[in-house]
Image (tube, rainbow, N blue to C red):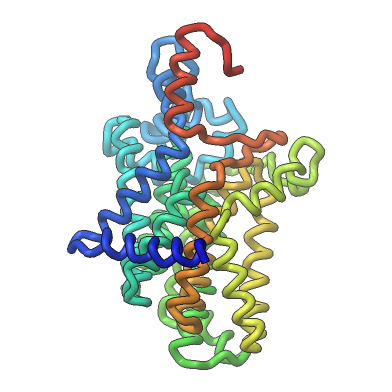
Length: 399
């Protein structure tokens, strides 16, 4: 009874807080503030990068080299990471446009991270017309890896750009916006190329409910609808450019790190379970609820398609060291699961699911796997401040 009263009081309170005209921006910015307070980014590494004699973040060094000469970057064979970056051109373009100003690029990525959450909020509210549901979705996703990494990635990987451009393609019906957003995402990181397939699943689900057609033939046809055809075209153009550039400028290029899945090696295998859980955290409740609804309503072809998609996400992720970054490209699964719930379930039920989703996402520590059996976590802001004081005071409470 006490829990029930608290639950009702909570939604009364949150509806009151969301009564203003600018409620969506308020929900977005408050969610970002909570996320950054609980998982403060490692900005001290960036300070060390700029300090004379400090340890340089190698990705930024190579991005600068690419910006100077995209097809002949110097020191390409200096580090294995550079080998993987030669076809990632979005950040070098930003570096060229900003004269190599890393801070401007990071501010741009953080700004797109805020817009990423707000656009998700816009979509959810249009779909369900419920401010509380929308706010809880924003709060939940803000406190998962896909959002936190947008602010915490000071290393020069640029995943925040790729996440945003993938979302822009996913939520648009304009073929030009879809195409150029996908190109921007693809040339940010190869993981986004695989994520194009998750967009096909997204439109497949949306069209299935729109047409009320869940047959095998209907589902198969939707892999070739207007939006889906743009993805196929974007893939063709991307690989055409990539193969041409590789043949002309990097004829000896290969990914030496790709072979057997690295997560099967002794030095890595402890990260898979942690990452599968921690990348999605409480949003697993949304995903599992959607799969359960599809199963109970006997939409087995949708279940099979989405299950195969999730297997692809996991299977491709285990080939890389930083598994969480790879799995986070599967954020469309969260959105299509929300779409299924909103289309088939009452708002009261969705509120209940999202309440517990938000609780888990907010209270769960932000941990991620960086390879070599290293599970890292981002400390809350008060802990980060204490660590900073400890470093200069020489107390050595932290290793």
